[in-house]
Length: 136
Image 1 (cartoon, rainbow, N blue to C red):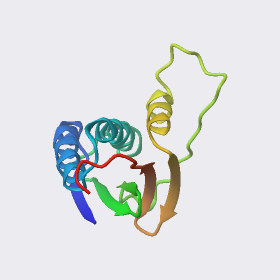
Image 2: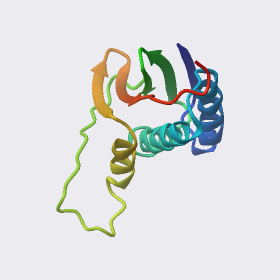
Image 3: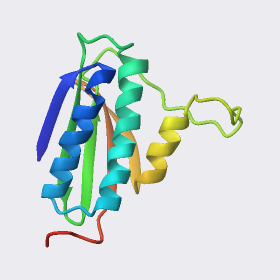
Image 4: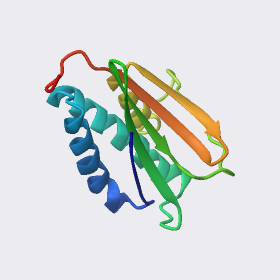
């Protein structure tokens, strides 16, 4: 298991993507699966920074990656115990609206996505089955 924690700033998205790409490669995840996971995490972290932390660098955001059997589990943590979130996804939304679009993208790229409330804040859990491995 590896974890990466940064200040809640949009400028840190690239370093999160680079860190995640490195760790997924070390776990032997193929490039296509890696790209999908990185995109999903990028969308979730962007939502945390913009909507939960309101781009306040005093807050932190963390990404944890772990191989569990034949899956990769990634946990995005907002370290904001007093922040209540509600994942809303409506089919009735305006198709031109950007609201909820990142969440739909993230969900479409993983096999399982859910939210947990923990003592240290909100945790978004993404899990993807990894069938083809670069390194066995």
